[in-house]
Every structure is written in structure tokens, then in C-alpha cells.
Amino acid sequence: MKKLGYLVALCPIGFIDSVIALRISLLLLLLSVVINRRLSLVDWLLLGLLGITAYSWLTVDGYERSFIVPQISSYYVFLFSLRFFYVCREDLLNFITNLPLFHYLLLCVVYLVVQVKVGYTYEVGVLEAFMLIRLALQPRQRGLMLVMLLAYLVLMFLISTRTTPLGIALLVAGCCLLKPPKPVLKAVVLSVILLTPVAGFFLMGLDLSTSMADVDDNAEIRLEMLKGASSMIGISEFLHGVGFGGPYRDVSFKYAFWHPLLDTRFLAHQVSNHNSLFDVFFRFGIFVYALFAVVFLRVIWLDKTTNHYVYALLFVTLFSLSINAYLDSTRLSHTFAAFIIGLMLLIPRRTSRHQRAPNAAVVRAGSRAADVAKSPG
Image (cartoon, rainbow, N blue to C red; front, side):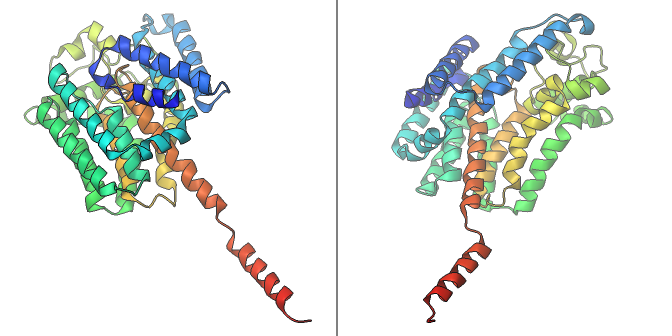
């Protein structure tokens, strides 16, 4: 039953519509309940999200807005999938690390064929998450897996309409092959986590959008999105977020240029800021954002996190959350349920191994006692 869930999750969900993705997440949730009925960490998160939903619905009049269900549905999809991965995490790790390379190769071919046939704008899928988790935790055949993943990402970039696969390939190659100093890697993670909530406020005082227009139109509109969203954040919103149903950005904000995503009220309500880290803070506030950030920060605090493949997994997760709406799209939420459980798997395996290590003083004392017992008289 667990393997069935893993194979269902490996379906290229990013290429299908949100309704099917929602049904798949519900199937994963039902499988997780059959496998383990006890309350888990994710169940408490679901209850917390339910409370936030109720609070957001009750404060509709206070924000002069209507409650928009699609804005919150993707967070439930994320937690439904996360519950399945969480209750099956040890068996999931065995599945990922023991699945033959030939099967991974076949899955890569399937994803590439689907991309060619469907022609959908590519986003990172669960397959890449599984491959990166294997890279981080399984030294056997690591070189072949790395070559396969990089080749797959380059091919996906060549047949897709986005640069995301190429960006991820460069991140993975940089971490795994160039092996930059770990203090530098940790500093980058910390800067992303700490600066994301306040990035929009800094951007308001800068005129980056016009200078970016000739370089990347996509980056230009996203900078304006963050500025317009940040203009809605006061002290109370900074603490507990704007809730659900409010626009993703202020349509009355003075933007550098006209664009329907910025100036059309319907689109300002429905289309996220394409930065899931920022949108977690934007909807929930700084305290919930801090809880979300702990997952990433605990990974870099671990003394036992010694290989750069762990950082590759961490950076791909942060990179994709920072440039796309992965937590605001039902089609993509499954992927980051897999990425986050991969990061969580790094934590208990390394801390428990550290805890199991015998205390040096105890070993020395035991050795001295044995010597005394052996000595004559």
C-alpha cells in the first residue's frame, strides 16, 4: 500500500489540472490514515490551518473582502500529501534509495515524453525530489545518479519554455561538483530565510523594475508583485498575516508600469506573488513563517551535515519556493511535500546517530574498570 502511494505521488502531477491533483492528494491522505491512524505532527498542522481558515472566514467584514476558497486549498493539498510522506518516511527512504537506477531512467523518459506531448510549461516534479534525496543519503552509484539528474534537467530545459530546470541544474552542479565552502552555503540559506519577509519593503525604495525590464520581463513583474504586496503589510499584518480572501497585492499601489496581474482586481485576488516563502509570511504572519523556516534552519545547524549533496537538496527547495508559487498551486504542492520530508529525513537520522554515539568519558571509565578487574590481587 505504501509503494502504491509512492508510485501515485511520482505521477507527473505538474502536467495535469488542479482538480485531478486535489483528488490525488486526497487519495494519499486516505492511504496515510489506513497506514497510521494516530495523530501525527502534520495532523496538528492541519488542525492549525483549519483554525486559521475559520479565523480568516470570520474576519471577512473586517478586511472588506470575500472569502476565496481556492487561495487556501493548495495549503491543504500540501499537508494532505505531507501527511502521507511523513507517516511513511522511513519506508519512503528505503524506497527512494533502493529503487534501481534503471527505474529512475525510465521515469525520466516518461517525464520528458509527457513534456513533449502535453507541451505544458515545466515545473520541478516529485521525481527530481526523489533523485535529490537519494543523492543526499545514498552514496552507492552516486556519480551515475548525479549525471542522470543533470542530463535530465538539461533536456527538460531544452524542450520546455522555462529556465527553471537549467537554474536547478546549475545549483545542483555547483553544490555537488564545485563544493563551495559550507559557511558560504549556510550564509546564503540564512539570507534567503531572513530577508524574504522584508524584501518587498527594500524594493519599494529601489527602482529595480525599470532596470530589469530589458533583462527579464518575468523578474520585472515579480519585483513589482512583492512591492505591491508589501504595501499591504502593517504591524498587525506582519504579526498574523492578511489571511485568505484578501488580494495578493494592492491594486492602488503606484506600480512602475501597467500590467493586468497588478492592476486588475480579479487577478490581484487570484494570482499569487510567485514566491511561496513570501506568501507563507504574507498569509500567516511572521510566527507561522518562523515555524516553516525552522525546517530549513535545522538542516544547516546540524554538525553531521557534512556532504554537499544535502546542500543541493536544501538549495533546490529554497530556490523553487522563492521563484514560484509552489505552495499556492494544487498542481505543485505535492512536489514540496516530498522536498520538505526529504529535509526532515536528514534531521532525525543524523541527530539519532549522534545521540547513539557512546560518551568518551564513559568509554574511558569502562576501560579503566576492565583493566583493574584483570590486574592480579
